[in-house]
Image (cartoon, rainbow, N blue to C red):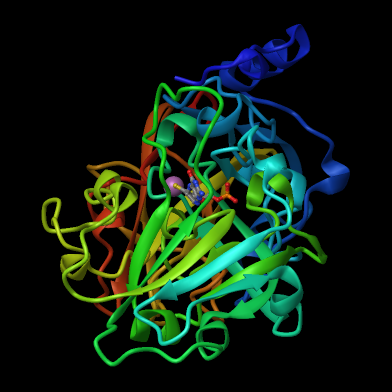
Length: 396
Ligand SMILES: Nc1nc2c(c(=O)[nH]1)N[C@H]1C(S)=C(S)[C@@H](COP(=O)(O)O)O[C@H]1N2
Ligand SMILES: [Mo]
């Protein structure tokens, strides 16, 4: 549960939340954007039509979206993904999901130092000034909390345009001892209040090779601005393609370690959600916490076209490391999977959008799922039905 006084909803938020949960919501259509279809097919189907509204997904929750809730370890913000569009791939900073808000004790940590040590010849303290000269644009990357779930509208997933110092460059500042095989990256994690949901302590162990191949970086800027407090200011780790639990915020230590080092509490807490074999005791027995190929609907639009009711499903595709050739959708377990209509993917990271025109034959609840038909890719969550979303159709 979300705790803290800030979690209490104002009357207006409560009304909005109940309205959202209650049924069809109409919103300003001036901001409805059109997805340029790849084959023209999708656009033709809705030509001359009028959008009547957007349906809600059922069986999710009343959690308010795009709103900062709670404090410290129980602090959250769930991103409203329903308005995400391919025209602007970046999630505005104030809507970017938050998992753990800044500690009330963080203010006393000035000047900020990153201890760069462990199995190195000469340990040293890196200042923000030292980092500054290494900061470069790092591009758009998606992060998703490994604990992202349907209950909160899968709102722990966002994209930002980052700038930071590559870990490889940061590590080149010290002479690494030959026995060092891994890097332990830790962040400030002491809080004023006791969490009801999480174990404090955020750190993760990576091999040198994982940091290099993922192009991991210590971010100091997000969407062209200095990093926000709740997103890890003054410096946080971003590991492109990996779950958010590895992207340590408020980084204060980078330590070279060997294969005997024990897994951190964060690694153990997230072992199941990052598909580890059990809860390994040693850091070396953890697999890369990379995000498998995933896809889900984010918006179901209701249209009237030539006097007929039609629906248009808009969704996202993210994770994985190979381009997807064929993406399919299924509207109910008794129906077959069919290809989506328009779908253009240029890269796996950050995300891509797809659409599918839909004319359900009868009213009722539909359970929508996606699958990647080709190529054969690892999609453990997707294939388990994790990202299934349901809608109630009352008019056909
Ligand atoms: N120091 C610290 N870093 C942390 C966490 C934390 O609790 N403490 N949470 C992690 C988790 S589980 C996620 S999903 C991401 C969320 O980053 P964001 O809040 O900027 O979206 O931060 C990660 N980094
Ligand atoms: Mo997370």
